[in-house]
Every structure is written in C-alpha cells, then in structure tokens.
Length: 207
Image (cartoon, rainbow, N blue to C red; front, side, top):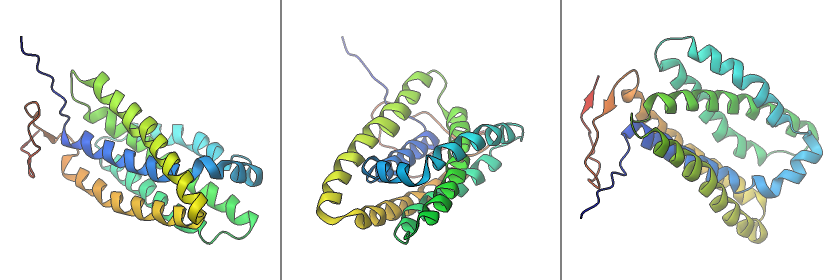
C-alpha cells in the first residue's frame, strides 16, 4: 500500500511563510536578550502601540475591496521592520528608545493586520489546518528558537551592534521577496502542484 502525502502549498502562501520565518528569526536574534533593557527604559511601548492600532487597522483593511490596500500596508510595515534594527545602532538616549519603539509599534500593527488578512485569503481550500500550522510552527516557533539560539552566541562574542546589523540586512533582503506577491493579488492563485514536484519558476495562474 502506497501512501501519498501532498506537502505543497501555493506560491502566495510560500512567500508569506518565508517572509515571516526570516523576519521572526532576525528579530529573535536580539529581542530575547534585549527584553530586560527595553522593558526597563520604555515600559512596553511596542506592545501597547501595536495592540491599540492593529485591530482598528485590520477593520479598515477589511472594509476595502481587493488586496492592494493590504499589500501596501504590508510593505509599509516591512519597511519599518528594516529601519528598526538599523536605527537601534544609533540609539544613545532614553527618549530615542521611546520614539523608536512607538514607531515600530505602528509598523508592527500595519504589518500583522495586513499579513493575517492576506494569509487567510490565500490558504488553499482543504489545507487550511496544515498551512496555518506551518504559519504557527515554522513562522513563529521554530524561527524564534533558531534566532534566539544564534543571537545569544553572537551577542556574547560580538555584542548587540552585529545583531542589529544582521537583522536589518535580513529584513531588507526579504522585503524584496514580498514584492513577488503583487502579481498574485485579487484572485490570481497558482494552480495546485503534484506532490513533491519542484515549483516552476513561472507557475500558471488562474482567476
């Protein structure tokens, strides 16, 4: 008896998962060991700003037809994610941290509101549980563990500045990955691929 397992996902979901994996990994390089320092000086500004803005922003995006607005919000948040670690290299005063964490809170709100919206719309019918599991396990859990482990070693050897630099470079690189989402918006979705078949460079799309 032969058992066939289809582990393929469509191109839009692949892009979103890869982006999330690398962004979370790059952020986890410094966040776990930077947390005490940040909490002492800014009192959770990032979480408060993100929490206050993400829900109303998500509602705003839901009320507009099409996915272009979600895409632009996603790109805006991704750009903030690039700026954030580079800006940390120049922090020298407490108020810098206040301003920077409020700024990244805005970016996180835009990024995650748009990300959840796009991911939910592009998951493959009949594979929702599997693809949301990839989001949770691969995009959040494994990536955080990898980033934290690598970050701890690098910080001990080279300090925080290298971690901020690496994080900024990784976020910049995967920002260009998100641009490949644009042709797949508003109903254009890659046709399902056979199990274990390599993904073609230019998959056929349907509307």
